[in-house]
Image 1 (tube, rainbow, N blue to C red):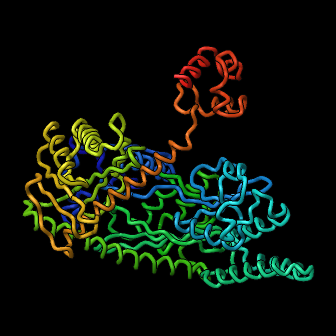
Image 2 (spheres, rainbow, N blue to C red):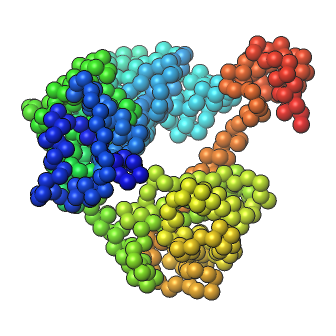
Image 3 (cartoon, rainbow, N blue to C red):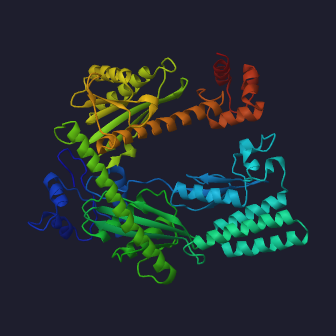
Length: 584
């Protein structure tokens, strides 16, 4: 369904086209969203497919590509994190997200990064398998702090034998596979053997490991069972929609994740869940495909989903709703989470709305503040300066619209010049792309930052938006800030417990956090970067060939043009370019 300018409004599939299209043009019984859609439709395009399977896949492809406003939208499409155990004499234990290119064993997926880090912390305390990067591990000259606080056994210094270290890695793998009972049996055998050999310290350490594993086993919702299962429970109410996902791997509940999709024309919970599952598995494809999917609702399209799984992923996936025993308990748990998370989300949303309403009142705002953007600058004595731009709307933080700016070409430490560059780059682009300006622009800073922002607004002729500055108070204490509105002569006095003041503090703190995160990343990248980075024509493979040939970047720097040209894949012209880059 297309609008005035052929923009895509809605994509849908149908077995009976007449009934499906006709349902949008009834004389009565239509909800407000459908009426809003129909009022904008200027054309309907139809595509025929050979099967329902093809129709479902085409629908998800078009939704992903065009993001029609009247379709349900899955906001969070990031891939799920895993725990990775590497290969080698002394394997490492790592957080992993993305393609599985490295050789080793992957465990997961976990429902969130927090769940992975929690598991890694537990494993580090229990089995003390190293979590340092290989580059650090291979170049240690003495044990690190993790050894001192008893969270690593210093394999880098060979303080532990390869055989004993392998036992710890095997215990870690058993734990991650959910085989807690097998792990406890193995540890008990090792503990008895250590005691018989009069190795009482080792026996005591293994005893503590058994205690930790048993404690986690007791906390688990289920300590046995088989299968890799995704459990979904949908909840649709007037206050919003929530879909809770429970991740079960090898019979072990790894945790849950809640989604709050933007609901389109779906009138029932079943329709919402059906469209969500289509996008979750067949559109974004960032998720591991389980052997079974459990639902809290019986859907008429269950057989269709099973056939699409088989066609797309060449494997059978069972989709079911009526289940018993442990599976029923998992569905009930997901159902409870969906209801509770929706209630919490609605309460949070109501709090944000109240804060926006209060801010509109104190500013005597004519209309509604729909969008605010806040800027902050972060650097370390001028190094790796980064500016942040965070966005809030009536729902709260809109993280998909956050932006970071790497500031270059200014005097190090000049915050005013950094702010000017960030604002100019941000709003020049918005004007060029003919996008809507925010209602309120906020800068973290005092009169200097305000004057800089006013100068940019005047140069770009930004109209219809208001500028605000938040100047830190004495001792940078929260609650003592000075608020400037429009210019440096007008200040706004707010009570410290005012919802409007809390909203301004929230967006300022979020801009500060985002700027610091970006700065630390840029600073770390600059400090661990190689001299060979940034040479035109030298990518990862050629950098690797140069390092392999000369031993280090310093070795490349000490080489002549002729010596560099001897490296496989490096022409004489490129060797000259490399030499110039390193010596200019």
